[in-house]
Amino acid sequence: GLVTLTGLALYLFIDIQAAFTSKKTRYVYIAQATIAGIYYSARPILNITSPQTDAFFALGYAFALLGISIAAERMGVTVVSEPTRRFAAMMPVAVGFLVDNFRSMNVALYSVISSGLYFALSRLGERHLFAALAAVALNAALFFVALAQGFDSSEFYAFPIGLTIIFFATVFKDSLSPENQARVRTVGGLVAYIPAAMHVTLRSGLAQNPMYSVIFGGVCLAGILAGTFFHVRSYLFLGVLFFTLNIIANLVQEGLQNQFVGFVLLTVTGLL
Image (cartoon, rainbow, N blue to C red; front, side, top):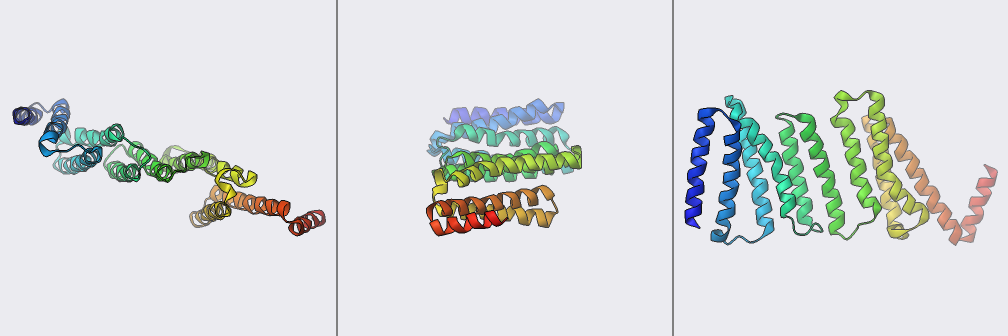
């Protein structure tokens, strides 16, 4: 109740004063946790019962801490800037514990917001760590969108993982040789493409719908364009490879169902 809130507010004031007096970061961490405790204690008074409200508070609190960290950094108050940055980075993890249903578009939204938070944090310090977390969170959003729409077959797990691996090649390019960057991109591309390509080839799962092949072809074309625009051979090679496989698989399947198409395919194959 109000007594608890008053006590926490007083404790917060003491922690902030101790942080600036002693220059010890532990008081800043305690102060930040106390603010979270004040919100938790105020929930019954404010009649807050929704996990979504709690999640948005946590993310909003993270961005507020980010702003404080930037201001403290500019003023040279490192005792505040580093702890607030790291505490802000923990907020998306807290949101994960608050979620009661992962098959929801709200979770995808949380992931996108978290990705933006980590990207902003990567500009302040510990660049590789936060940039990697931004990539993970952004690609997790793709997975949660698919999950919310009821798609939970292997390709919807593999595609975000493959994209994340590809992003890692860019995030850690300073510590990877050009050859290793190419290897990482190739592995990521294979992880992203292979499950969908198998479904197209076998006409299994969602690939029984002709639109699946069209969408897969569009993804392959996007890979070809990315490889051409960014001058990355692995993107171009994998895009062409799986686009060709997509066409061949569809022609073969059509040939099995249509005798004329089958005759033409066998004739062309024999001539080649």
